[in-house]
Each structure stands twice: as structure tokens, then as C-alpha cells.
Amino acid sequence: MIYGPFYRIETDEEVTKSQVESGDRLLPMTSNFTHQLIQLEDLIPETNVVATIRQDVVTIAKQNNLEFQASYDDLDFLVFAILPLPQASRVALVAHKNAPFPGIEICVRHDMENVSEAIAQTLKALNLTLEDLTWIDPQYEQKNSLIPINCNY
Image 1 (spheres, rainbow, N blue to C red):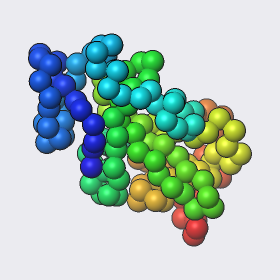
Image 2 (image 1 turned 90 degrees about the horizontal axis):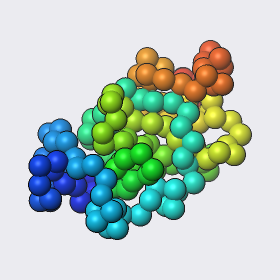
Image 3 (image 1 turned 30 degrees about the vertical axis):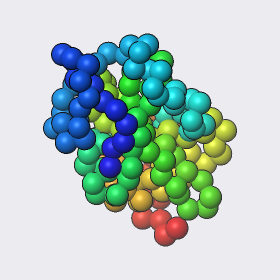
């Protein structure tokens, strides 16, 4: 599910969830609209991008029963969901509305100790594989072979 107000590029009329799912583009950020939202960094600490998932928000939300919420950062409007992981950790899944390439960022806390394990757990929770990632932060990409995709958590 996707929550929050969205707006068309051409007008300020509110857009329904089904229109967002159909791929309608959104308005550029305006101060009027951002007053209705809370900035992502003020909502969650998981803002350090470590990998990008190829799939789009609608696909991931439907396949995993995730609820995405509207927010923004210093770049763009976005939607995000929190994905709880085993062993009392979690990641944020973030998709910027006007990104040049579709995809969902896997974000962690800046002080997370075992990022490779968090990536592996995220992929497992979403029923994805390494092939579903379009990018991995180079400091974790070297450890790619260490990511236990078939781990039992």
C-alpha cells in the first residue's frame, strides 16, 4: 500500500493511489506541498544507502504486503517503508519519485555493524536474489560472496 498525498505535474489536483501505481509523474517539490510532509531524516535514522533493488515500489509492496509512506528529502519526494529484520534490526526501503532509473534503495543506520548480513536478510525477506540488485555500495560489493543468500534466520 502507498499512503500520503501525491500530485500531478500539470495541476495541483490530488492523485489517487491507482493513478500513482499507473506511473503518473509527480510535481517538483514546492514549499506548499512539503509543509504537509515530514522530512525523511526527521522520521527514521535509516538513511545510509547500501544497495538498490531493481523492482519498483508497486511490485515490492504487492508481493510483500508492505506499506509505503510519503515523505521527502533534500533531493525529491519519496516513499518509504520500514522492513523489520531478524535479530532486532531493520532497514528502510526508499524510492525517490523522480529518480532517473526506477528502483528501491536499501537504507541502514550509519552505525550498523553487519551491513552485508542486513542486505542478505533484506533480500531473503523480499524473496529476491543478488541479481535483483542494480547497485551495491563498493565497500560491501567486495564482500558480495560473503552475503549468505540462503541463510536461515
